[in-house]
Image 1 (cartoon, rainbow, N blue to C red):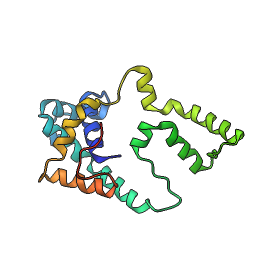
Image 2: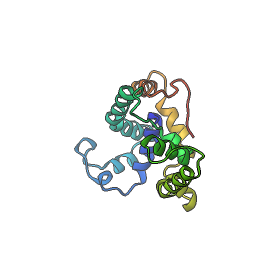
Image 3: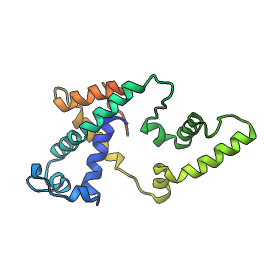
Image 4: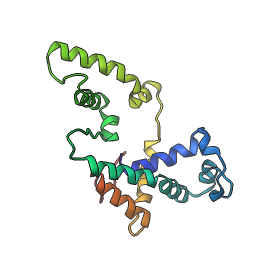
Length: 176
C-alpha cells in the first residue's frame, strides 16, 4: 500500500477508533493515549507522530517487496488494486493459487464465480457501499498527503524513499 495512504488513513482511524490499544496511556505521550494525544495536538503533529509510529511496518513492507518483486512464486497485489477492483484482484489470487483457472471454460467460470461469491463478504469497498459508510474519509486525505510531502521535511524524504522502493510515484500527490 502507498505509504502516504497508510499514514493518512491510520491517522484518521486513530482519531475515531474504539480499539483498546488506542486508549492505553503511553509514557512517551505524557501518560496520554494515542487518541488523546492526537485529538489534543495539531493535525500536522498528530499525523507526523502516527506516520513515524508506522515506519517500522512500512520499511518491512518495502524490504519484502524488494526481495520478492521478481520471484515467480510470489504474487504482489497493491491495496489500491483490491480497493478499486476487488473481483479482478481475487481472480488473480485464485488463479495464482491454482484454486480456479481464469479461462472461459464453463467449469472454470463456475468455479471462479463460486470463489468470488465466497470472497465478496471480505470486500470492504462493497460493504461500505452497501452500508453507506467509509473506512476512512477520502475527502480529507488530500491535505494530509500534502503535509506529508513538504519539500525538505525528513519524514517526507523517508516517505519518498519508501514510495520509490514500492514503485509508487514519488514526485506527485496521488490517491483520493
